[in-house]
Length: 234
Image (cartoon, rainbow, N blue to C red; front, side, top):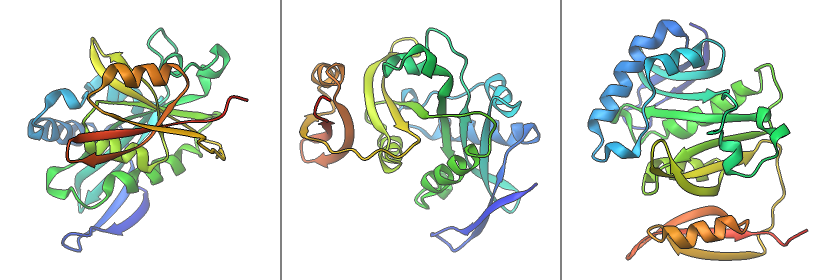
């Protein structure tokens, strides 16, 4: 197993190592996912992957990285090279047909409950994006979906500079934010900004349909609020 990163957990000063995952790790991947799903209060906040979906990624249609303490898998992240079909997230963010093949998905991100609070999601995000640059293929966009009020995942996406481009029902009627980030750095200046309560689905959808992007969130006494920005029309 080739080590691509070594670090120390903030809590407990426990050393860990990060490696690319392969099909030989499938049992550990499924066990960890099942453990995390069982620990969730809101089971709707996470869309777990099937064994077949993990095997598809590990068979060259994406990549996965995992953090290990000794031999125990404690966290992992996955990227997927998606099939271009009617559910492709590129359509949700209004990409042109010829751009769809340049999209990669950030798929599931899992951290063992015992090891939360060590910034493993963010660390693995940086590592897997670096590994993406080594894949064959030219990718310009990274996309993903997150459930409203899934605060850890929303924080994770905003910390990576991803933006909300759409809010719609996915996966059989489940409401999801669709996030996007252009992999080539863009110098963006938001000329307009407005903040909406995360509960106000209709108002958020209206702004997003007009080209606004969700760029950050904050907690207030009366709930979670999302800040939206818009650039001047060119």
